[in-house]
Amino acid sequence: MVQSALSPSARRIVLGWVTLAVGALALAGLLAALLAASRAPGVSDYVPLQAFRRALVTHVILSFVVWYLLMLGAYSSWALAQIDGQRLGHLWDRVALYGVVVSLILLLVPAFFGLGTPSLNDYLPVIDHPLFLGGVGLLLLSVALPVLRLLIALIQARRAAALCWAIAAAGVAYLAALACFALAWGLGDSLIQGGEAAFQTLFWGGGHVLQFVHSGLILVIWWQLLEHQQGLPPAPSWLLVGLCGAMALVALVAPGLYGLYDLNDGRLSHAFTLLYKLGLIVQPAVGMAVVAWALLRRGIGWRQLAGSGVALSWLLFALGGGMGYTLTDSDTRTPAHYHAMIGAVTLAHMVMLFVVLLPALGRPVIRPRWAMAMVWCYAVGQGIHCLGLYGAGLYGIARKTAGQAQGLEGGAQKALMALMGLGGGVAVIGGVIFVILALRTCLRKVAKVTDL
Image 1 (cartoon, rainbow, N blue to C red):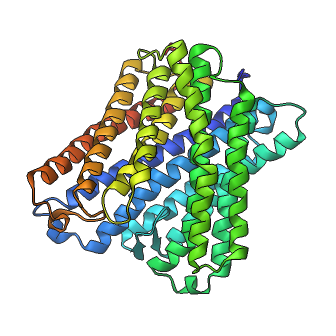
Image 2: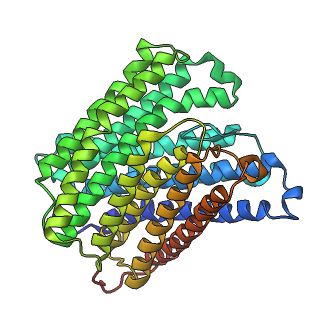
Image 3: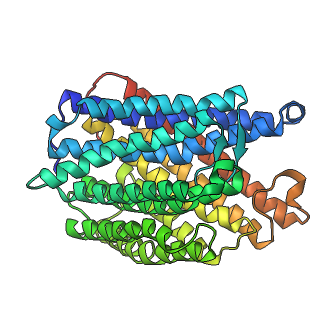
């Protein structure tokens, strides 16, 4: 996509989304450190289980929900600026950013002040307290604003780059997820009473649909990074729009399922699973095949941040996808699968920031070598972490357990869990490098462009 020069107001808005997204990761890292410290011998006896779970829920929300959704807001605002830079920076753009800031405060207060009951439900774990739930709602609505503004601009525009349409398709899937949350809340009388089962019902369907958003965005990122590196996209841009559009169309079916089945009807979960098969197998697979062909035919470019980032993200995505065909509900193969997929998407966002978004905002990465080290630490560490988890699952180690509850009896089981821990530690190092580099880059003044 040929990038136009962004106006000062457009730069401020996009930079605001990026800075808040990286800031959310930094807060998640701080909570992760506190969680690790709270489980240390001599300390864990003084940390109530509920306090630990509140911090855990907040960590997960910041690192796997807020981070991803704020990047969607950043891409939507960036795409809007490509269509018409004068549109960006108006009242609604500022309202969205202020809404995100307030939502982050609301999400943090219950964890630090011991309020509410934590619920470890899937996709969007929450703390059952009005402040936290209000923060989740405000976050979701704030991210919807730039998505809606992009869609309106595309409808009104005579022409727009294909990448803008692909980002908008991911935005359509996001709006479908919001519709699922709203319908589940409106139809569920039992949700008023709260509890983990109620929140599982509330967020499960929409959480499913959010995976369409992430899958669409990773294709967008791979396309843009390869175009940046190789001078042309891996395939005609209409294919990217078609793949993302096809995923969005499947996602749009999801809200209608609530009119066909009761919230507690087992057929509802089967229907959402069918949507996965229709929207998240063929389309991502075609996109992955095209990207792999472009990498092999034109050269990966391991010494370039874009080339190594795409290749390693692709490998993690393929690893997680392959693991997904052998899952059970009880052992650690399930978290191995979704940690690999999450790692692939996270790595893609990281590289996209350093290679495309921040330079477009006049803030190129300060230390390119450290950025490359970040990519390899995070990717290799995440891969080792997931392989350890997957191997442990083959030995029957249960998911969502810790300590003696894991039942680590044999040497192989202990070795695999140690491997998991080692990989996780290496990935954390990569994450710390990213947060420091990204925050320094976001907060400094415009500087000379550094070639990546």
